[in-house]
Image (cartoon, rainbow, N blue to C red; front, side, top):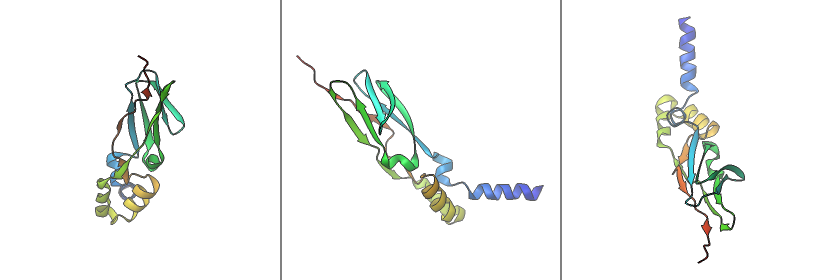
Length: 131
């Protein structure tokens, strides 16, 4: 029984990674607008309508996401999600020299090697107000 527990502990140690454990494999992105009835989109998928919306994006998809805010009669505003290296990933060097934890899990499988540079966006469509 003790051997089985030891094997499970060792396996779980090697199939987890620092960035995925500490910061997760998804990023919550908040978008808001100063215009009421704004429709919010992640790429082509609607995520809400009003003055704010929240979405969750897998970290391995962050670089391909464009946030968009639209309102009838207004100019659309959009912004890509900028990413940066998640330095907590480097702790994987202490686990297994980074071979499995960084290269396979954080970089390859989960994308946890990156994180969103910012998680709060203000995208207000430009509405032309008549005098």
